[in-house]
Image 1: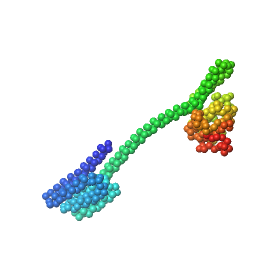
Image 2: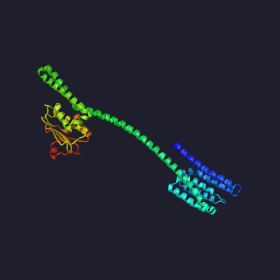
Image 3: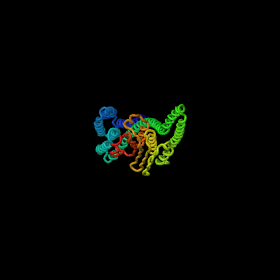
Image 4: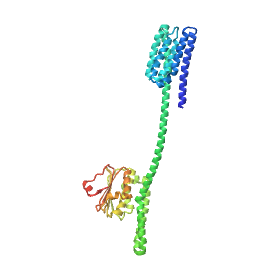
Length: 403
């Protein structure tokens, strides 16, 4: 498309210039044939034509050449117009120069050149044609303006077409990159979903199933040594199986997007404390302050953090009481605390414990800060907050290790 447009515009330009030149040569032959000035005039026209034909090639090599070319060619045209007789038709050659001027020069420079040519043309023709000189000047100037404007418009259309093609190429490249980014985003989303499902399973059913496995092994050993005590392990196994089923049902419910949005985080925490293995095993006090609204993703991840923290308390802390404090006014935060045996957070950091990493990832996923405050024999406090920094009193930081 680009080549066809350029070919068409160049063809029109060459055809118009050729017709102008042909008209001038024909009029010269008809007017000066057989006169002494005939050969000299034809020689000057031939020289003018050669300069016109060579101008594009020379200008490409020497850009400043065009200014000298235009001045010389314009002077040569007015010299031909001053030949004996009435060679006003030589002014047609100014139309050819007008096309070149509008191609090479800024619009205001080309317009100024056309105006100066109009004034000079009047001065040349007024002596020969008197009042008719104005009409001739208007005719030739109109031709200069028309062909010059057409040429400039064509050049701008070509430039716009070329620019549009460049933009189309850039847009195509951008679309290709966007498709690549979209594919990568889909892969990343799939990986995140797998990680999320892995965390869901770990935080709920996996740990209970692990306890069922240990209880089953204990019951098998007791059946051989002390069958009467095996019944206790079987009862515990039954309770764990019931708890695993309850956790699976809870997991399925929470995987539904509308679940947390419908009941809210406080209600979800209360349901967690009444439908899981914490009943009778670990008394948990829930304290909710404020009624601020959280995003669905925040509520779901905070619920899972609380569940994982309570599971850790139940299995490792040897605590008789746990507390959940939910602060739903700015600054938003949640704490899960116990007064159990505690641990060293610096050692836990390198232990590869999935539960701690899962809670930290969940907090980071919703843009909340995560901190563990614990020390051996001093209990544990897990705090997640929506603020940038978690403020703790100097007494707590001196008394507990911070992770």
